[in-house]
Length: 125
Image 1 (cartoon, helix red, strand yellow):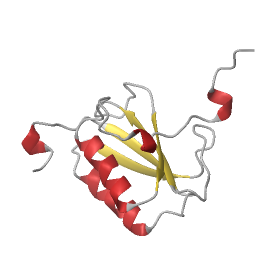
Image 2 (image 1 turned 180 degrees about the vertical axis):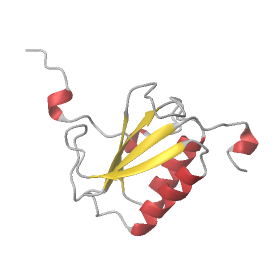
Image 3 (image 1 turned 90 degrees about the vertical axis):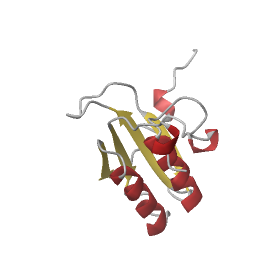
Image 4 (image 1 turned 30 degrees about the horizontal axis):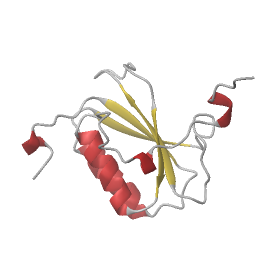
């Protein structure tokens, strides 16, 4: 059954994909592209390394961040760090989550939530 058939609706978002993480196959990127195209107000941007935003290792898979926004691309919430996206199944899980409106209900598996960059983590002392 499609996501729309379950009453889910996507929300506007911008998905920023690290083009430096080319360990991912073209199939993984294509699955993400199809998922974004299936969202009326979704946008996918390819950029250089996202190491300032998340803690990634280029040899482990594709990393990305997604930010909810308005239709005219103004941010409406914080970024969600995603990765590593290694398999087509991982990319499909991200696509289901995006089409479902990016809920915070476990739809996006914990293993696909990337850690923030070390300098963005608060230190106690």
